[in-house]
Length: 213
Image 1 (cartoon, rainbow, N blue to C red):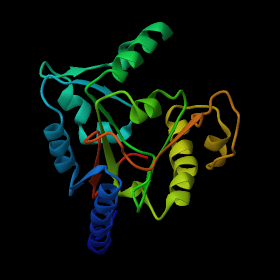
Image 2: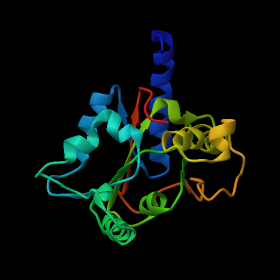
Image 3: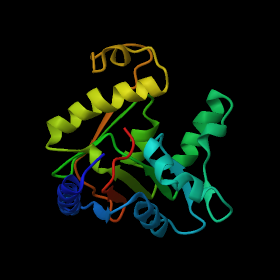
C-alpha cells in the first residue's frame, strides 16, 4: 500500500514519463485513478470502432473490456475461438481493426516500451496493423532505464504470468528468468518500441496506481 509521500513521488514519475513519450511521437496521458484511465480510454475510442486486445490483467482491472463489450462497439472476442484456425482468423481480424488495446510489461522513464510475447500476436499488433494502439500502464511498470525495463519484463512480468497460466516453466519455479527454451515459454518474441513513426497511432495512458503484472 503506497503512502501519501510515495504517491506524490509517483505523480512526478508519471508526468515525467508522459513528457518522455511525447518526445518519441507517442501521445501520453496522465490518469490519477483507474476510473480516470477508463474515461480517457473511452474518449479515445469512437463508437462503431472495431477493437482488438492483448492479454492483460490491467484491462480487466480498469474495466475497459467490459465497457466496450456492447452494441456501440465491435469488440473482437478472441477467446471465443474454438479451434486453432478460428484463433488465427481472429488474430488476422484484429490486425485490421480500428483500435488495439493492451498494456506493457515495462516502460523506461525515458519512454521506451518493452513487451514480451509467447506467440507473437500481441507484439505484432502493437508494431503494425491496427490503426490506433492504446496502452494502459500502471506506475508499477515504470523503470529507471531500458536495461531495467528488460529485466522487469523477464524477471517480474514473465514469472508471474507463467504462474497465472500455470505453465510449467523454470521461471515459475525459480521466480526469475532462466533464459529457457521450454516449449511453454512465454518469452518467444520481444518488442522494443523506441518511437512511433505513424502519426497519432500510439497512445499511452499512464496511471498513478499499481495495475497488472
